[in-house]
Amino acid sequence: MAAICLYFQVHQPFRLRRYGVFESDTDYFDNLRNASLMELVARRSYMPANRLILGLFNRYGHDFRISLSITVTALEQLERWAPQHLETFQAMAETGCVEFLGETSHSSLAFLYSQEEFRQQIKLHRQAIKRLFGQTPKVFRNTNLIFSNAIGNVVRQLHFEAAIMEGWEGVLGSRNLGFPYRLHQSDLKLLLRHYRLSEDIALRFGIKNWSQWPLTAEKYARWLNGMNGQGAYCLLGMDYETFGERQPEETGIFKFLEALPGNVLALGDAFRTPAQCVQEIATLNEINVPQFVSWTDDNRDIGPWLGNAMQANAMQELYRLEEAVKARQDQELLSDWRRLTSSDHFFYMNTRHFGEPAGNIFNPYESPYDGYINFMSVLDSITARIRN
Image 1: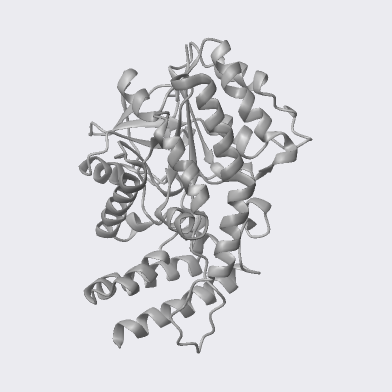
Image 2 (image 1 turned 90 degrees about the horizontal axis):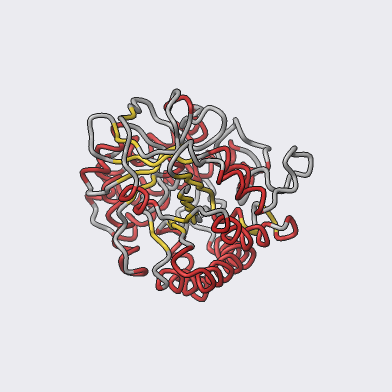
């Protein structure tokens, strides 16, 4: 029997409005656009997916389980602009079939520049999940699945039992990604995302010239069942927007999701949450992750957010202000600064992926340079507020 572990990432940043170099207004965020996009993605993706999954919980009970990772920036926007959609997430939590994962509150890269801010954002996220869903996360997944030994050590100090990382050959070597491992010189358990099977749904599902198109639930369940003898579990992780947004309804993605549990269970396999996997399946040996690894592009590195001089400069200048921002003890200023830590702002400055469809979803800028100039103009305003 293979344990199938599904986790979905829900995140929306607070996108900036066009902010002029000589402006002094402190209203930085494009709330009209943010509200419109939240309503759009909720209508196309979150709402139909939530209703479908609630129906599957009703049909299969605890035989079908999933995990969700939801950022505080997404939760704040749901609370403000789409509370009826937030209620469906809460209804899912009440079934007892959903595990909520821990992460940074703002989908930030804080660890790279400030362990203090990294810890604070994890605690803020933990508080939000407890308040809205009544759970305390036991398993951690970092922004964009960025992970290393150093990150894992801090995560363990914050009392997480396990973390999710990319099951990439550059780190795994010849190891089998179908088993939990332990972090190098730590008792933190590691679950590995099966990126090929995950991306068959997230990236390739609707591509008609893909050799496996059309991907049916029956075929996919057989692939998962093929993990038997090769591993004890298969962790599939993807953005929740895969359903209805990245893969539009007309591709058949919702019909696929609806049919998947029945096909998996019919083959004798089971659904488990990440916490169940680490409790029920014995860990193998250690994995050493000295360098950062992520779930993005072929290099699986942090280049998409820090791969050029604009990104590095913007990130350095942002975190250079951290101490001064916090010293002001101004909650509105701190909130604005924290919203700037979302990794999306730096991805918009990415020259490697600019022009690719996957890199342009909800990107408000015509070029990476526009993204950089706009971000730095807002940062100049933050600096002025600190001085005043």
